[in-house]
Image: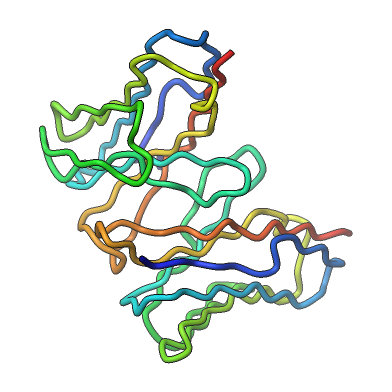
Length: 114
Length: 108
């Protein structure tokens, strides 16, 4: 029942190279989110989208950009990867914005920057 | 800014034990989420609750809005319950603020 898929699942890249992670959903949900998960921290919001071409920054947006040209796809780009961006990245979707609505998470992308 | 705190950070239990994980938050909310993450796995939503109690199988979640506190209970714990349990509640941008998680290990 993978209404949300992330690709790639794993990636190793070199410092300074650009990297794009993809989140694809089949639920037609309006809201999409990118989070990163690091030891000692809860999931932290990087960017989110509230519609096609509508995005906003989250808590830890520096060094990241996003794009959403179609309802189903939300791309996260690291313009020039750094070692501090080694993390597990999760995409999430929700039909409505806010804490009172259910969220569905992707399986995560483990990114290592060497 | 809402802050979400969980306790304990780590929990080891014997199979069959009753388990409680606690979550407190600093700002009034309309709903709180409990999530489960297995090692190397994705994140699954267990509960979303705004008052009282919800039950699903051996899992029970309670919330006390006045005290800004929620608990997740697991009855008759089993090794397959070993996972990280995460609580989350409302953030200022309409998104969720997550606790750091409680790592549960259930020994046979």
